[in-house]
Length: 616
Image 1 (cartoon, rainbow, N blue to C red):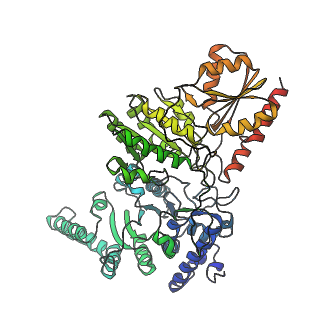
Image 2: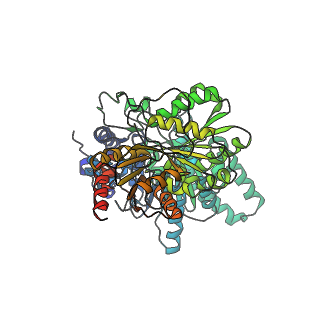
Image 3: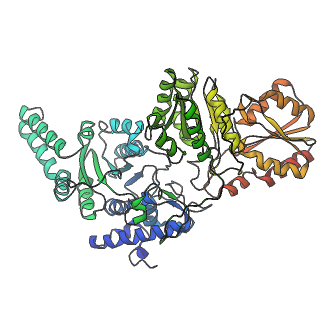
């Protein structure tokens, strides 16, 4: 497919040479290219289709990269990447060594702030705006944040600060969860232009010169202006925080977006622009089901996403089924998610037990303390959360749950390496950051059935527990419908061998068993990271000359550190080696390739075992 306008763009400066009438055609070309490109690589689709015109307008009006565009989450920046010289790289989007699916400072000067989690853009843009002021630079800082990300406390902390910080910055609220109602039409477009123009601001300043800023007449006029705006727009909250609120306007109308942004660029102080967009805009299948097309695998654009059933349930599905089964017999069970109900496998539970399902939005800190409050009153909360997102609620986990020894179950999805989403989404640190927390119990299942039994064990424990499982499907083990638990704090020997014992945690059991066959090693499925099975470790150390712990977690402070502590405390003379993820952020790419590069596949374990055995 050819793209007459898009083919000529290698940077935003070229975009700014276009006549504004050409921009509509460019938007159509970009949208077609996005569908074609993402259908071949997979990635985030509906969110990117929804920000095509907004991205064009921002780069058309602002002098990027000198003016700073700070994207929130960053899963909607594909158009931004295409317009900033990375169009060819989209062919290897999210592949090893290719373009990231999120903004990265090391990838392009146009990516002003690295991101992958939500609600950070306003804070970062405020820092950039105040730095420009301190340097005496005229550049502008723009934060682009979605309505979902506005539910997080950090976004409001930043708004509260920005409103009194005297910084020249613009916050663009990309609202894609609200239909464009009749008021968001010609009249609203006119109001947006008028309120963003210099006339109103000039009149206000002129009045202050004549009457004085504190005169009763000026104060009365200000109150009238505020109430009129409040009647016509939903921006009273942002006005009260110190922002000049404009909108809402149609985020797909370039004839509205561009002049409004041009006017806002001229104004001093904190500005707030509310735009309304449609996720999946321009691709009917994505418009009809933006959730399904949020993150996609490869597909045929003319057919769309086809359901694939390979007979192997994902860990999220195993969790979801367990949640429903346990809720059916335990009326005190309540489930909490920070806006990840679909990804965490909770849709059936939400439908069957709507009064016990709580989606708190993108608010991980609140989710954990909310669970603690429920637990204080006798409920049994289960917090379904991705490993990388629990990092954002560490203080709440520590003080509000663990310190009070409250019975909260943390179902940690995406433990270990997740693949294409890369370093912001890898669950590489949970075993480390959880192990040092008193009262915390940590389990890592080796297969789907073990995951189910661990969840039951955690639910029945009188204290905080985390069950940490990987992304995607497991080994294909059939799960039972029972709600049996596991012996608390106990691992198991899965293979008896000689000289070498491999101590596998969670997902590492399968490659450990494969490697053990070649060297006749013993293999232990450790199951519990905390409390660690001391008796099993002592037994293995007594019967083997070399012990190797294997975990899909950061090597520093993880499960291997617990094994080392036991060996040290018991005075064991057995040689001990730890295997895990290296002390660096691991890039995006195919999950199996990333594990192989970290030495955490069958061949890597085999090489390490043979090397250390030969050195004895």
